[in-house]
Length: 251
Image (cartoon, rainbow, N blue to C red):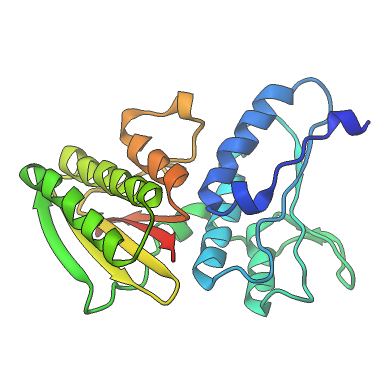
């Protein structure tokens, strides 16, 4: 039966966890209805950055939403309890409907994390020394130049610079088109990443924004989807106070 198994390198596909659900959607769409469909996906591995593990938690909550009304199939998510932080393992108990493993009694989880609770939870505030620019439609070309300058200062190569400039431009365009014509771009560096944030006062009601297969994308989700493909990590949070999208490019 080995010919019926497809392998995908999770360190490539799942580098940005937002890329995983579209792949599972395509997989289930292709094989669902032909018999039992099974998936195994390990997205939280030792050595992941804390911010990546935060997105793994959101992803796991969103999986339940993405497939709640679709064709029946089974997805197994392995977690290495001996090597991952205890808080990550604790998250497993809230984002998975069923848990099994050595030393555990198999069964349904008593607690549940709802996807919208995670999606509407604000991200930590940007650093006080972050570069900040308020923009409108007339500033989009200038914003591209600003992001390119930041990439040059971070010594990113030409391809990665082009990717980040395009991703930031798409998100800023979303703010102009869908959030009252204006937004705010913030940028800063951490020890391991250049971070570009685009924030506005608009609200996104679909927590799966940017995670649909490309052919199914509505116009409003196009910018986030493009960013998901171009950046090492993308964080999207939206609620009553507005929407924030953070693009992380590892240095």
